[in-house]
Image (cartoon, rainbow, N blue to C red; front, side, top):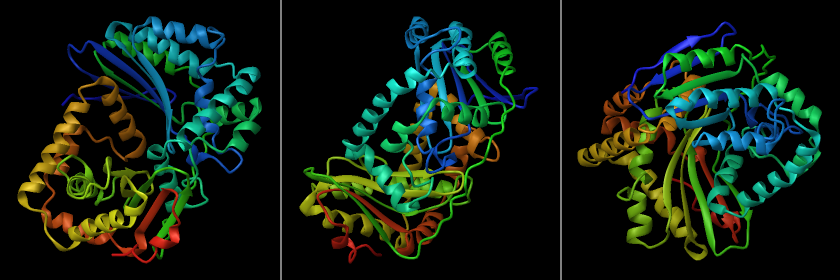
Amino acid sequence: MNKYKVDILSNKIPLITVPIKGAPTATALIVIKTGSKYEGRRTNGLSHFLEHMFFKGTTRRPNTLSLSSELDSLGGEYNAFTSKEFTGYWVKVAAPKIRAALDIVGDMLLNSLFDEAEIEREKGVIIEELNMYEDNPLMHVEDVFESCLYGDTPAGWETIGTKENIRRFRRQDFIRYFRSQYGARSAYVVLAGGIKEKDKRAAMQILANFPINDWHHKLAVKEKQSAPRIKVAVKKIDQVNLSLGVRACPIDHAEEFKIRLLAIILGGSMSSRLFINLRERNGLAYYVRTLTEFYSDSGYLTTQAGVPIVKAEAAIKIILAEYKRLTTELVSAAELRRAKDLLQGKSLLQLEATDNLANWYARQAILRKKIMTPAEFLRQIKKITAADLKDTAQKIFINRGLNLALIGRVQGKKFKRILKF
């Protein structure tokens, strides 16, 4: 595994470099520690909308075309993303072009115009993006599930915001949020791949211009639940898309790695228990997957599937039975070894790409108390025993942590009687 180095600049921005000798590409990723959990009810969606506005022109590159054409001329890939706890901007290019990429991204984050006319035009774009998510149950079921978990709080709101908020935002809202949340107190930067010392110096020169901001923290998530919960988004579709899961733990918790491995065993591959049981043996679903999410102050494990309306109850019973089985039976040595090998192999394959490597180190820096290398992560996985997994399963697969999100032509009350272990 590649070694990394962290340099703390004069304005306290951490610059993380992960050089790969001989790598033909390099990625620059600037991550800001802000997202929809940092918003209020009237500002929900502003983090995501602001992300769009950084691509609309700067003082040096005054419009979208001038920005995008320069980025395209580098012959690489670039994009941005907004999550609940951080927002990122990245460019992946041939290694010799990384300094040019840094200059453009730095210009975007330091000198964007936030033009009022562009804001008004972009409202239509974002509303169509919101419509796209709502029209795609496979994507939208995650939002419904988190709303079920966290309710009417920033953690339970959708990152994209509401149509009402999107239409209401004005230029001053963006300026105020930008000055508060974007700056040296909330920025983390990663350079990964075929980078050289001169690339690092160029990054330092650009980052030194980031001002000290008045960054405000998010509200902490309060994990309160005494009984199973159900949330339904009624939609006229031919399937029921469901997400059935449990509350777990935050990142860096002692149970984190065991829960990750439980998810692999349950629905992380074509040989996983739920893929075989729901799809191969019973023909109930095309897609089946078990996922985990670990935030800084909360987390969950959930299984998602698209099933026939008339078979939704049967599918839920199968998922609950597999959850329950993990609390009563030890995972076999062969299955445990296969799950560990799969997790290791997937991690190694993903981290061959410099953009994935940059994203790994950015998430570590923002969410963990201490950066964990991929090698350290895999060592933690390797130590887990079947008894560890059974113990963790008994802690998380409990009635008061159960949550069920459904999208389709269904009523939630019909599933209340079966939603229990």
